[in-house]
Image (tube, rainbow, N blue to C red; front, top):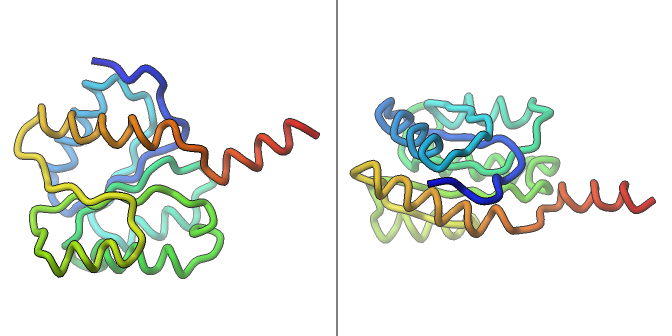
Length: 152
């Protein structure tokens, strides 16, 4: 199975479970994604990378509960950093723990989706394909600046 149009930009994956990293990587390979994957085990190191990178980021896919800095804290600090917030990077949560309160807290931060973690490879592929099908077609603010430069 291949994604017809690969989205542009790198993918940030944040989860403290090594098995989840492997499952996500295998799902990307199964879908034929060539995007560079940057994996982190907590929100703090992910944020440091996001703040410093010169790469366009297509997607941030994060667990909710992690040590050092959890996913909610990561989303908050992204929103408090204007140059990152303005890039309007899709932020998706994927978590085993998904109480009503956690889901409400996540959506209060204007995330773009909340998925329950997949228990097997086919469901991981299906979730990733759904995300890519939608966000791969959306126009991002970073696309607008490139289009404006091209028109001049």
